[in-house]
Length: 220
Image 1 (cartoon, rainbow, N blue to C red):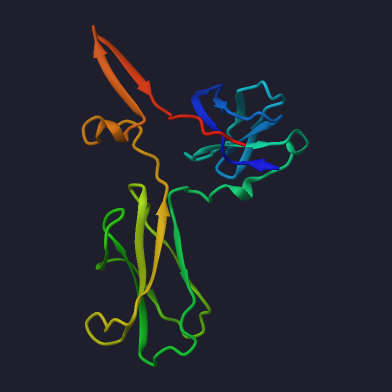
Image 2 (image 1 turned 90 degrees about the vertical axis):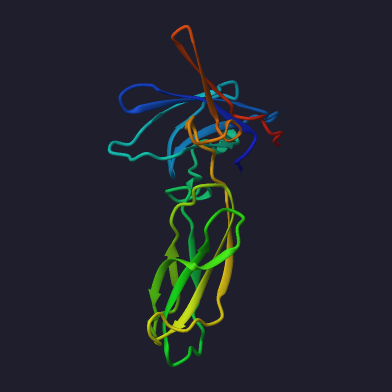
């Protein structure tokens, strides 16, 4: 049985030309093994409950991608649970819709609109995409631009007719995306200290960088 919580990654470092070592701490009281994934590819696994470090081989030519750890029972250590992880990239989201079964004769396209900031109001003037209407098309989907901050992002699909110049708007189909976006790693000029995982100080010509990963949740 796989588990997705109950641990924190504490250190990531290179373990060779095409390998990475990931250290972590966890709060599991049961006997588990930990699998390491890059995107949706399993690249390593522990062999004992006492191990808190995984070395994984990075696939040749792999682009930058998030690392994730899944806890599993010992008998499932060889199984692949990549389907539980998000698609790459992890901070992109897709909206999809089924068009009206009896659309207006002059339906021309759909505008994908969104709010301009997390937890903000929907702004129908903020058009992020335009999807042409195709009469025989059973559904529409569009990958939204990556969100810069965590929070709820309001989006909508607005049907428009062929009136000039931009078409008259119909009733929007609204939705929201609860985006979990990690805070900035290190941007000392523009980000507030409370929103960073890393902070720095310089004393006597020595640069010190401190990291914060939060508390370990109790699981299971």
